[in-house]
Image (cartoon, rainbow, N blue to C red; front, side, top):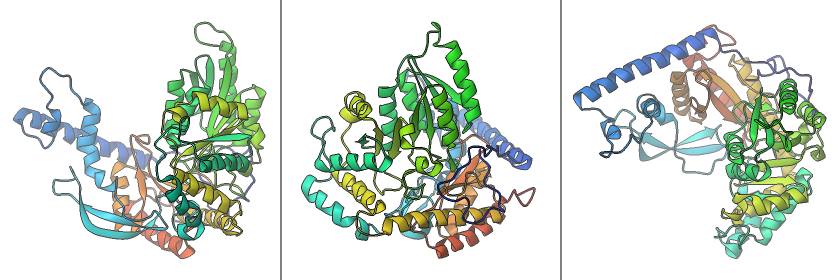
Length: 508
C-alpha cells in the first residue's frame, strides 16, 4: 500500500496537474502490535467458532443448523470455510454493512436504523432514520446535492420522451439521440476519436476486455486492479502477468521476461500486448504513476488500457482525469475506460478510443449487444453533468466544484494525518483510506461513527487482505469546511476509542 505524503506537506498538497515519476512507491508496513492483535482476534473467533460448531453437530442444535442440512443425496451447497466465516465471523459485524438509506446520497444522508433480536444473525429495519454526515458515497462533484439546480431541467424532459428504460440492447432498439450525444461529448471530453457507453461500470470492463483481448494476448495487470478488470481478463482467455502495484520498474522486468519467453508451450511471439492500470485505485486512494508506466509501455510496443472510474471528473484542473493530472496526452493512451457513477451522479460506463476500436466493441462486446442499454434518463443526467463540468451551462459551477473537491480532499487528509492515523494514497485524491487492521476495530469504528452521526464505509477480509482492514472516506465537493471540521473532531475521538493512531502511539 502506498504511504501517504508526509504530514509536513501543505494542506493543499501538490499543485494540481503535476506529478513526479521519480517519486518512490513506499510500502506501508503493518505495525507489529496491529498484526499480532489482528491474528490473535481471528484465532479466538475461529477457535470458539469451531468449538460451537462441534457442539452444534454433536447435540443436533445450532442457530445455524438449518444451513447445514442438504437434500438427501445432494452435495453440500455451502463451501465449509466460507459458510463458517459467514456464520461465526461476518454475522458478528454485519450490522456495519449493507446499511439501508432513505435519501439522496448527498453531503448528508438519512440512514435507516436496524435492530437485531438474534445476536446479529439477522437485521430488521425500523421506521426510524438517522441524518448523518456522508463520508461514504461516490458523490465527488456533489451532483446529488444540487441536482434540481444543475441537471433537472435537462433530465426531466427525457422521462416524458423516452421513459426510464430503453427495453432493448444498444445494438437493437436501445440507442436514442441522447445516447449518441453522450458518446460524442465523452469522446470530446477525454480527447479521443469516439466513445461507446454501457449500462454498468463493472460490465464495461468485464464485457469489453474479452472483446479486445484473447488467446495469444499478453496482459500486464497492476497487482491492485479492480475485480471487474480481473474478471474481464480471465474471461478473455489472454495470458496475464501481474506487476507490482504502480511500479514501472517491475512492469519493465515483467515485459522483458514475458516477451523473451513468448507464448506458453509454443514460445511464439505474442499477438499483442496490453498494460492495464487504473487512474485512482479505489481501495488505496493512490494515483497512478502514469507517465512512467506509459514510457515503459511505449518502449515495448504495448497498448495502454486505463480505467478512470475514480479519476475522471475528479482529477486535473478541468476534471479530465489522470491523463490531465499527470501530463500524459490522451493520444498516448490507446483505450480510456471510465464510469458515470462517481463524479457524474449517474450510472454506467464508457470506453473511449479510436473509431476502429469503438466499431469493434459495437460488434464484439456482449455488454453492447446483449445487455439493455443505459437508461435514457440516466444518459441525460450524465450528459447534463458533463455540460456543467465543461461550463457549457453558461456558469462556472463546474470549475467551482472541481476546486472545492480538491481543497476538501486535501483538508481532510491533512487532518487525519495530523491526528496520527495511518492514511493511504496521495493528496488530491478524493479517496482517503485509513487503516484499522483488525476486524473488531472495523466494526467498532463504524459503530462509533454512526453514534456521532457519520456514515462511513469500512472494508475488511475478503475484500482486503486479512491484515489490511480499513475505512474508506470519499470526499465530496458538496462538503462544507464546517462539515469536515466536525468530521475531524469526531474522528479524533473515535481514533482514540479504537486505538488506531499508530503514527503517534505504539498501541494506536
